[in-house]
Length: 402
Image 1 (cartoon, rainbow, N blue to C red):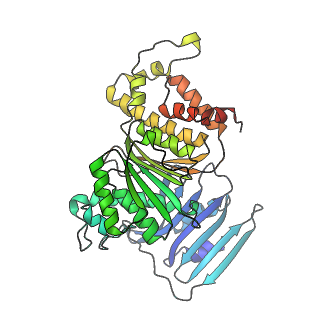
Image 2: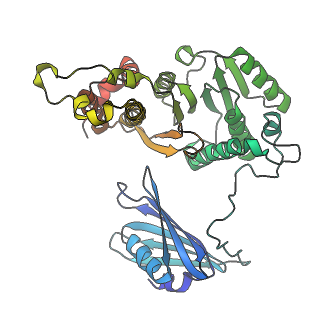
Image 3: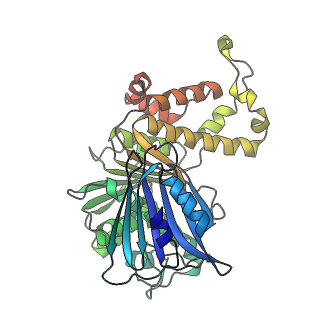
């Protein structure tokens, strides 16, 4: 492809390959230049629905990799110092190239391999709620002991930034934050969406602790955040709204996460962001000693997994992964496009899984059948399944054919 010959050089700033013809594999590729041992390389970051992969290649190899990608993708956008380029490919392989000269030259890319992280909430820029929550000083300097929290807040906002196209800008949006706690992330959501992105939103933070709610309410009033409210209450019993656009549940303990997810599905929420915590329920169910299966209907999954089940630490971790995997699959069955993402580095906390789900409105019978097979094999009954069945969600999904 001639366009690659002329652009993969020192003037290349960034590129994006998108529009896959098959969404079961790689769905997007980002390209950026970098320097290694004095030579020009290109980093290709490819994304599936659930994972990201990186590879570094020299100019020649990068051209071959990109050309191969373009056989199964519809478009590529390239930005260089001097021009913007669009490459479109038809089903029959016809390539259309559109070039537009820049009126002013662009800034050359930073070729360092370990570039300084650019945060949504920038270091050195004073944010009032971060100061009052003890994360930064009045000068905007992040307090050293709170750097992990600062990174966590920005990481969470990145997850929201990725799904902004799914949110309606033409009306007021309702966001519920179940188990908001000290509300670092609740304030960050409001600040980012309302103050920086100008979305019309109301956010409701819900928590059981009266003193926490009182403190957060006073801070919200101090900043003039009129559409940010904090209420004392239980996730399972909350019915203060009839429709919700986004549900956030961060570190809601054990089955409290399931109640929040079931509520979100019942409201037909467009976006769900959930960081589960303390997944004890299935660990308890897996502890039951049952060496045989009623009616001889196949192997008992607990026996098959004895090398894991006989070790408490491994069984606990397996149960936690099983819990969150089934939660994500239940959301798929209910029509959500679901990802499991790393929220924060494992070195900071083992509770680092975030479930992000976007409502696509397409009931997935295959996912429902996979859930049933898994639960029968391991003989477990997650709370979320029972809650969704009580709402009439799962019965319909199991009957749906693909």
